[in-house]
Length: 183
Image (cartoon, rainbow, N blue to C red; front, side, top):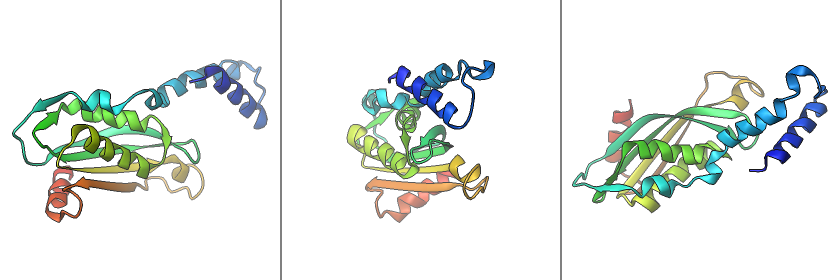
């Protein structure tokens, strides 16, 4: 991450909206924003394989669900936050992953500028590629600040995206089990 470019961009932005970048309240803002970007966009320097490759042998053949994983991300269209919950279900194929590793995997992809639909698919694809379960279901529920504080201004509205892979695709019984678990 190039902090100097970020600081320059923020200074130009502040000038562009008519602010005085030398006034007391704004003098350190470019540095603060650069530091914030290191945290908000840390997903560009992390890899899901780091988290999903540490597995444990398991005879479990039924659905495993981790629900209500809180996340924060940034919309690539408006650079405004969207946030909510991720629910992950997978059917193991001889191995399981530590539960915290699912939340860490969510963080890898949430900490990038992107859209919710892509986030949902990235989590599912990483699970299939690295953990290699029989199937995966990922559901993301999020509120988008680009819809609540600007544009249509509809606070409280949520967007839901679902992605299925492997045996979860077209398997209504498995999907129903998943939805019952996350209720």
